[in-house]
Length: 152
Image 1 (cartoon, rainbow, N blue to C red):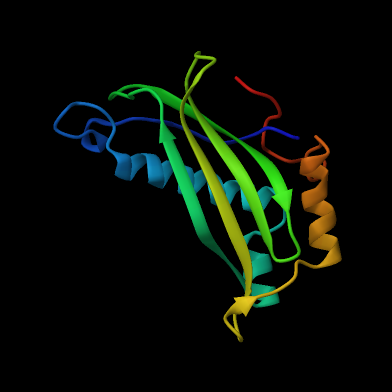
Image 2: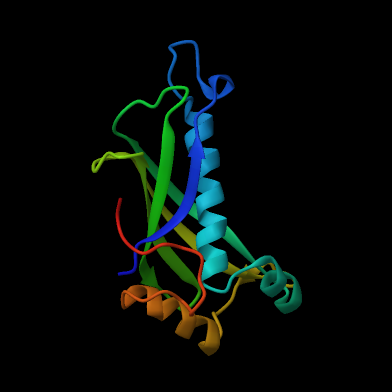
């Protein structure tokens, strides 16, 4: 499986709760940004969604909070594609504090590919499945991808 860096950022004081660590709202937001970057790298970008009349919907999301993050921490999210179905996919994000090898949080997501007109799940095209399959095989989707391969 290809491990792609899909988010890098910093924790700001306004993202922390009354206990001084990053609030769960912000874990979710940062994982959401990582999700859209990951989908874009696999070909499910805004142009594809618009031109093909498609959408993606998260139908299951599980977050495990393993360590606290504080204002000033820099984080990196690495993502892997775990499964491609005919109409859905499953992927995992691992959030790391910069320079740490153990994740601070893990997010597992299942997304469904939707037809805008019917508002129902629809199959991924063969071309799109081909791009996604390369992530399962440990390759980036295409030459020139901006995601970095590998864990921190």
